[in-house]
Length: 121
Image (cartoon, rainbow, N blue to C red):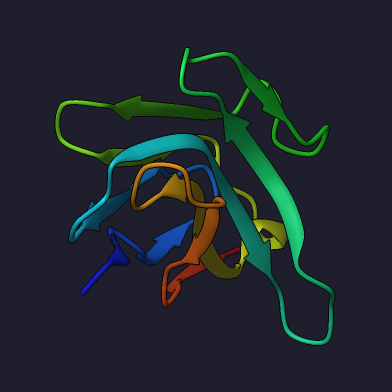
C-alpha cells in the first residue's frame, strides 16, 4: 500500500520547537516535489513549505526564518523543523507528495493523515 505517514506532532509552549517527519512507503518509482500544509480550526488548508526533488525550497511568509523543510531521498522521508513556535502555528499539519508509481503513468498526489501541532501561549 502506497502511503505517507506523518509523525512528530504534539504540544509545546510558545517559543518551543518540534520536528515533523513524513515517511513514504510502498511501491513508488519516483518522488518529486513534497510539501507541508496545515489547517487550523475554521480555516482553509494553507501551504507552509515546499521542496523539490533537487532540494530547492520555498516558504509561506508566516514561517520564513522559523521553519526549515528538508528531505532524505534515500529514506523517502520529508521533514519540517519548526522553531520559535507561536500559538498561531497551532493546526493539523499534512504532508503531500507528487509521485510516479509506475513508468509512463501520470503523477499521483499523495496525502498523509495529518499530525496535530498545538502551541500554548
